[in-house]
Length: 488
Image 1 (cartoon, rainbow, N blue to C red):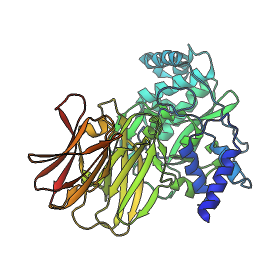
Image 2 (cartoon, one colour; image 1 turned 90 degrees about the horizontal axis):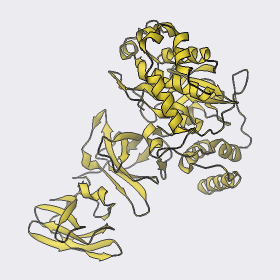
Image 3 (cartoon, one colour; image 1 turned 60 degrees about the vertical axis):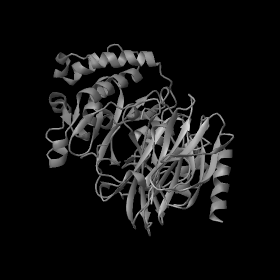
Image 4 (cartoon, rainbow, N blue to C red; image 1 turned 180 degrees about the vertical axis):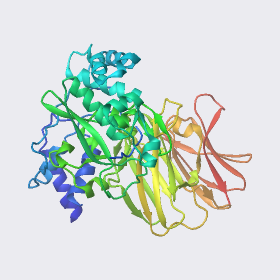
């Protein structure tokens, strides 16, 4: 009954949306589902998906406010401000021109750092409009001001006036926002500082919002609308021990519908959403990171940050990009064995993240991502808190994934357990669309699976020793390994 009611409400809401808007479906459903049912700053890592320009990482604008208005038409906007700020409309940016502004900002000579006014004059000298001025200021601050980790840890933040931050090159969030505000003001930009709560240092999925505000950021007015900026998080990340500079596009003019996932302003009107979220709704939003948006990921199956299960879970995400995903289980701050998670891309281009839980407890399921053509590190994309009631006894784990598995877009249907009992007959079912042959190899014995439209199937009696599943792709007789099992 509840499910039918929610489906009807969501369907009705979507039907009332002007088709000229591009809708990022998974994020909309997250917010709709929660609403139908439901100064030291935290420093956090790095999303390039701001809505002012398009590139290969950008996500479309999605009309969350319109969805919420349609689902909850009687809900009233709440504001503690003397006026209600209006979000800016979509602006497209010339990336080549942005590169010129960035280059100018990064070449600022030491001599202009002696005063806010001189620095502002230098940064905005080549700028043709307010947008370019804001960009130049943001780019300079994120490159030249370091997060004061020692001050954060000790509680001794020092002098956070803009002049002092400019001189020392170090600050916590209120120092970043103060300097950004003064540079913007000196450049003729209307700007404010916003206090609120952020899912930063030490935050885990599902944690409540407690105590006074813990973060600060800015909003700037460009044209007739307001845009959100976090130059602290734009400069890099910290784990509470050290600061790592890593420029982040995501926190420059971030779409409000994305910013709300990790920033909750004290004044709800500065969410820049027509229907602001409450603290509880904010907490229940999934704990996503910048690379979630950067890689165009969308949530398909689990829309809240805390999930309850008995002993296993399967979470589905999707994107139009070719990605490589991995996952890790964390309990009491310790990473568990990699065999407890298994990620794969399915035939319908969704990404399936599976996890097994050995005992009743609270776990963090952390999902990482990187473009499949890259060989660099995986980036944290989204966390879930999993509350496990029973756990799974006995030897548990998934098969070990070998390099060719993700490379060739393989999907495993059976067997899912990485431990196979000697003497048992196991059905093997895999989707290997680019393979010529697939074989289960045990010692010197090879068992070739039968092919049918990209699926390879067969019943295999488990023998002692190492069990590998390998496939022939390009060259006859040359096999690459996909999976490895353990016989017991």
